Amino acid sequence: MQRDPSRGPELRLEQPGHLRFATDRFDGMTLYQCYLVANILAEKNGLYVPQVLVLYRRGNAPLFGQSESERGKFTPETHTPEGSLFFLRGLLEIARYVEDQRGVPFYRRVLQDVGNYSYPFLAIQSDKSLGVFTRYAVQAARAGLWRSPMFYAYYAALVLFGVQRVDRWIERARRRLGRTPALGGFYQGVKRS
Image 1 (cartoon, one colour):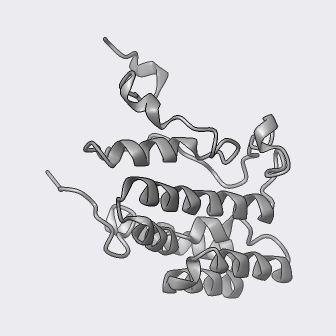
Image 2 (image 1 turned 90 degrees about the horizontal axis):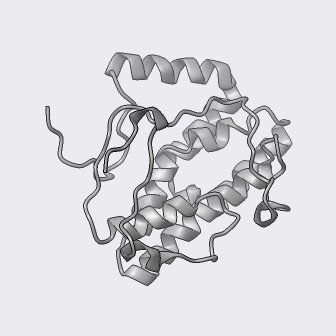
């Protein structure tokens, strides 16, 4: 079967094998695809594609909160601290659930990786008042990110220097390295040239 490349990226599931993972448990979290992929990767190899396939620019209005299962969890067209925390907790809940159900010990590694790359979780709420932003950061820390020194570094940098300046520093680091810095010891696959 030929795929039309103009349609963009897609997730292909083997029929009927991967349908056994179907569940309503994570409906409304906007992360169901993470649940499916985690289960698939517990059994099969994955492929890393270095090109950016999906891009989100800060400031774009999210569409979450439109469906019945998302109501009360997200507010359409705005990034609320509550919605961001629900998203973060959902991601970690999926990692814990898949670890428990599949016996694949990766929750702590996912938590470490999310902490090392928690800048977007913080930056998206950094435009709030210092009190609101700090309460949000405390709740994110309680979700598990307190274990990550990078989480505290991002929070401090955002409070002291602001999101625009920190964004510029991160972009300079990416340009200098030619990629996003690899933080922590999360498995990055086999590198081939």
